[in-house]
Length: 550
Image (cartoon, rainbow, N blue to C red; front, side, top):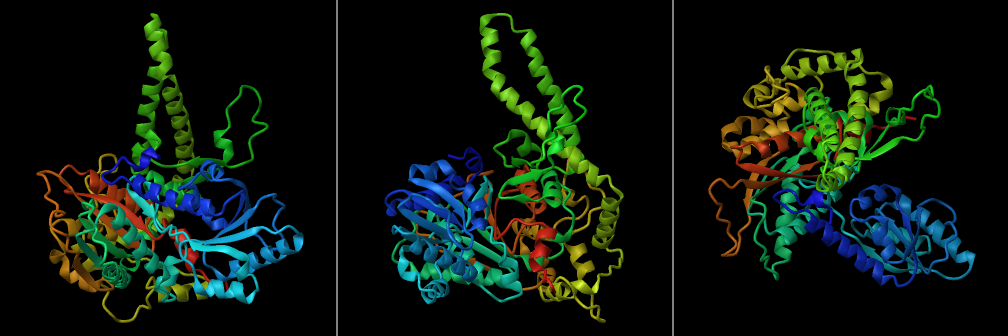
């Protein structure tokens, strides 16, 4: 069990266990010793579902990264390819299989497509003369991966580009399938709200899938009250703004991949007296970041300017706890102190790590470059005119940005941003970063449009902002999914609604922090579970849209 997945209103361990069970069943079909050949992109997401120990229990003896030519030698009965359904990967697999066939004793080959089988890929394998070599050709529907107690991601890196530039609905289909899996585990979601073209398509797919499964009535009591489907292109501004929460800045500066971050090692080297700093480690320091770590759970969503005071307070508490050892006189007291020691040492290690990370971030946030960039951004978001110029080498990228709706030629048309900004209160002048009272603290003034839409849907409802909803791209809609008698929810007085909010095209850590802030409000009335096609920041998002001209 991953304890940090079960702290919220919705126990996401149920989902993790379901996908682990499916993985075990597939591995057991391939009887005997096994080697897994990984599509490298999948290793990170899989690590959140199953550690090597689980694979080992099911006779996985070797693991290799999918590469051209021959596979490394392995004395195993089964070779299993875990891959995304991509044509270019089929060519590499064929090369591997053909070179194995020439090598001698026959192996059993299997292929597991994640998250779906693909006829095109199977046809490619057939054309290359290897389709018949696979005993099992199956799919592993790993659509939504639990990252934390309130966070799920598909980690589909091309989803935004596919949906908004290439008109490819594959990732929307996977999103709809993922939502059907959630409903099978957590009950039918009675109300679906949506904004945007892709949101409409996902809702339609879900309704169609539900009709196709009419035979089996879902008898699970619903955990979620609402689903809000939100297109990323309804709010293209937020991902481009610099996130100013602790977790957001770690992602902006170092990039968080599948809950892990790699940091410069010199900050984490133990300081020894008189060694003059020689023999510093050269390998990046890799840390896992999730709410299983008490201190991280406390500071991750705070504005960075509020983190220092928490760390110094924690340092005082920890050093006072260690001082207690001098007061432990009796055997009982010493025993009690010793029993608390592992927890105290873990807390001290955690504090040391986050103090080092905070110092690294501070070096960046106090630089002139950072200040200039932030000033331009904040002037832009608060409505002051700014100019930007880019070189010819970005012409293809600029074309993609225009196609995605991020850039528009300045014709004589009306600029709707001032109306949207005022109606949705997207800019707040007096932000309290230490003890926030509004979601705008995550960007020190700018309230993410996406989260403001969620907040207004919850209270007083979208009818109050009809004019703005018409200006923003794509339709807005509401669907009801009827529940059988006996499964209708009667909410207790003071009990919050649970809303699943699904960002189609990606979400940033600052938006997640803003939604957690709303979930924790005393009188908020709604708790949020967040799902997305991809966890991203402005840089990773633009990189996914970039075209390289040479």
